Image 1 (tube, rainbow, N blue to C red):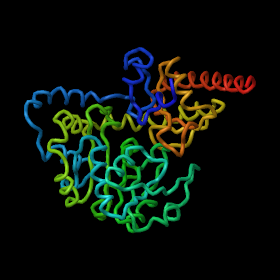
Image 2 (cartoon, helix red, strand yellow; image 1 turned 120 degrees about the horizontal axis):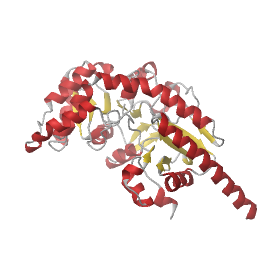
Image 3 (tube, rainbow, N blue to C red; image 1 turned 60 degrees about the horizontal axis):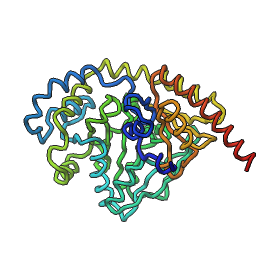
Image 4 (cartoon, rainbow, N blue to C red; image 1 turned 180 degrees about the vertical axis):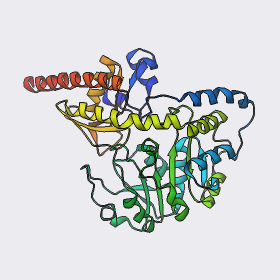
Length: 370
């Protein structure tokens, strides 16, 4: 079995992991995909069940009820909202706009989510590396990206995979410097929109916000997200896309989730404590260096190979972590884990401590006999 056989470009591939170790997907404890471990809200489950009879008819192509629900949640006009088949579909149309707005280069913070390169390359443009600082206090964004002025910018906030959260005050000046700014806020709902730029969209026609509903509400299999941008831009996107991109079950689930204030509050109360527990536990394992994170995942630098670590955890404990091979700047010395329940994190931490110790020992033994 080669390292390439074990490398995954995205977390959450439970079918692959289960086939590899000879079990069923539910038997895998998944720390590779940053999905809310509180699970699908009961209100969403009920809404999906109630919407089942609607699958006999085509969805509303204008998604009026869903657009209104999103608009009410963010207190904006529904004409500024476009639902999509996950944020990935909307990223495709954003990349097409990014390609139109410059001469072949888009400012892109690296390391970056691999789907950004997929979307940009499909439009014939390349991400221009803008650099990143792994220290808790990053250098000023304006100084960091000064060489890219006049181009377009693609950024996620909180940043994936580092968990860095940029402040509104850092990002707002960029809107006057770049032709087009696309901000992927896929994990911002975990932070109660604390540093979201959604409220700035109506003042800046060159700003596009992408959001996901799948991670927070435990719906990755339904594929539901939305974009917030100027109505004229969204009208162009509508002409490019296939009709009926969002199915009726996803629409019903999203509307119910956005209305479930109790679930939202419970998630916001859970995250800080669980994240601190995971970060402190990782810190106590020799050979691991967790990076400070504001998101529902933590990037970890490792003394041992992350691919070997993932293989050990999967085969010995049926635990799946996210290696960082798809982030060229990180390679085999970083992995990412999502914040989970305290009980599952305790299981992960014990397995990691055992894995690092054994892999360290085997490495030293191999060097001694070489």
